[in-house]
Length: 235
Image (cartoon, rainbow, N blue to C red; front, side, top):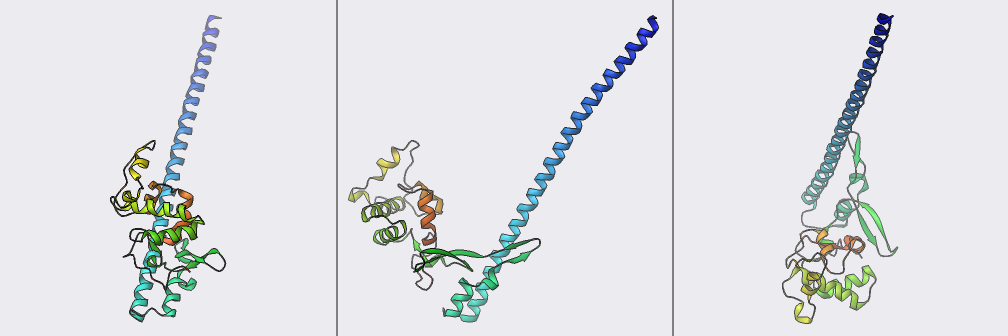
């Protein structure tokens, strides 16, 4: 009798041990599966990023090659054919295939007649825009009036803020004291007093936010010598 009870207890212990072992193995299996899945997902993302990088690089190289070809063909003469070839050429710049992906070289161009933006395939000329690093206050004021649809006083305020950010002591003489504004913010900082090096810097300037920058972006630049190319400027 005692021997039978002992055998049953041993069998019960073996069963419990087996269940515990099975549970532990199940947990290990799930953990290993999750780890493998995460690694596969990571590899997939890296491959996608790598492919995107190659697609972007391919678009840039295509644009450079197209410009070099056109410069060699036309020299310094900016013909109507050159303008079309560089800035509005869907046949050359649209849907170029690389591996499993495609890329477009495109930009948004303002159509003053339709009062809307149109997507064009080609290279955008930054010198066809207003350079906020060099533009005068009057030029920027008119730009802000037209693009942002604001009054003269508000547009002047935007222009003064831009100039004050990029130049030391330029507008304090006329009563625009930027230091008071920037130093009284929740997280204060000083005006840069130097040229803009990125478009994101505009968001640090008094009065500007994401929505304003988005509306201004097609019309402004921080590149070039400040001379506007009337051949490629928006109407």
